Amino acid sequence: MAISARYTRYLVLAVVGLTFFYFVTRSSFQLPSTASLPKPKPTYEDFKSQKPHNTGINSTERVNATFVTLARNSDIWEIAKSIRTVEDRFNRNFNYDWVFLNDQDFDEDFKKLTTSLASGTTHYGRIPKEHWSYPEWIDQDKAREVREDMGRRKIIYGDSESYRHMCRYESGFFFRHPLMMNYEYYWRVEPSVELFCDVPRDPFLFMKQNNKKYSFVISLLEYIDTIPTLWDSAKKFLKEHPEHIADNNAMDFVSEDGGETYNKCHFWSNFEIGSLEWLRSQAYIDYFTSLDHDGGFFYERWGDAPVHSIAAATMLKRDEIHFFDEIAYYHNPFTHCPSSEQTRLDLRCHCKPHDNFDWKDYSCTNRWFSVNNLQKPDGWD
Ligand code: GDP
Ligand code: MN
Figure 1: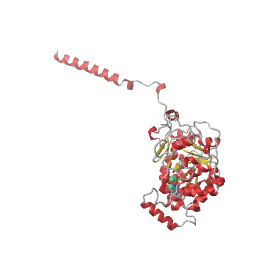
Figure 2: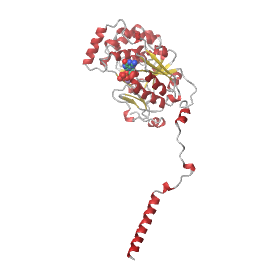
Figure 3: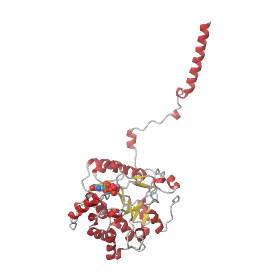
Figure 4: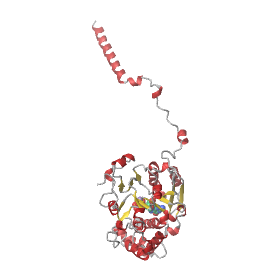
């Protein structure tokens, strides 16, 4: 009797245990109905046969425009990131061309990868030697001494020769490279940048339809040690060529005393969407040629950002310059993130609002809004 009572207890325990086990794992005992079966995963062949481009936005009107990137072969992985972000947030729906420029030949790896990432047609150009070397009027010994001195003074890129050629090229030549001559507008993209929001409308079309010639997303103060005589040089040019000064220009963005001194404000040119026809205009070419003869690209370290900005602020009408609030952008170390929460949600942005540089100390974007009496976006402090 004692034995059978023990077995009964084990039997009850076993039944309770099995019942518990059944309920806990019940779902795995049930066969799914056909409706809830997962779809078979697409194969690689399916993936290849899909059209990756031209999804989403239904745009018919196009502008004669291109992305343009100046890069070295060694920039390959950093430019890959930039292309990916621009394609994902904008160009996969538009397929604009992409022009790559380099002072050396691009290698096959660079071309293969960038062509695979870009949805539009890619073009690769080598920069002619005359556009990436010393003009004859430059004293190269003096230029070297300047680099050594600026290196000792720890001025950013102060000791770099290639950086100076790069700044001069971006200031005066990229827009007249043979590959660029067929286009009307450009969007400059550098390695390692990021876009944080969907770009909801075609910025090229916006520029064209609204007669904009130059645009920016971040503006800030320049290091004065890199441009001690740039303003003097620009003033001299404008005095010699008053015909190039625009009516209703934005001089008050770059000068607070009617043009006497420069306040160091400039548009950050690692992002630019602009008119190539403006840069190829007599006014801009005369301006660049005059600055180039003054030698500051080599005897100082003039950046293309203040060079473009001073030109835009004096030789364009103020309403030909546009601030693209909706293009959320990062280039080390600054971010533009739209102030308005509604904009960030509508455009599926993933930037941190706190990182927005617009209203921080070194930004000039606040000034841009006040000198132009523009209404600040919602959420702006
Ligand atoms: P930063 O943004 O001022 O720190 O300067 P970057 O190093 O980003 O250079 C600005 C742009 O010029 C980038 O698109 C670089 O890829 C490009 N760049 C800089 N130096 C050279 C160079 O020596 N050769 C070429 N081909 N491109 C350069
Ligand atoms: Mn850069």
